[in-house]
Length: 198
Image (cartoon, rainbow, N blue to C red):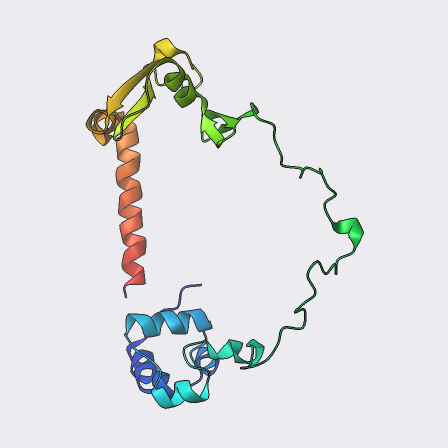
């Protein structure tokens, strides 16, 4: 939940942050430690050198008790291949995870058909374009002439530049009722954001 700071809280915050333990401040201001750190960053506040020397340098003081001490050795040093979870929980040699898919596997992502290749998943319409034409130059886009992402034929694909792509997807080309919805959404967003600045 967002923390709204009063002027009185900010004045106290500025005075005590440099030399006060952060988790104690979080309790005092009824917020999370992250909110305390974020506020300190916005106010460009830092802990004093004396405080840092006592409380673990630049590392968050809540983590000090979990840090390695100088010269301390890890408990599992020299135990390469250590199995703690039990053999039955490990992957067997040649085993494939449940989400593994073979080369050529196809699925829909964000409305586009993709295919698994030796280079990972790629858009099928891009693969088709490269199969019939050259590589796609930087700043150029392969698009569907009829705007139907499932009509993947070479006749339905064309190469356009960034300016043409922006023109086709411009706000001015949208139906009036869609423009009105976008306008209302922007007004609502501005109103919500204005509350956060108080």
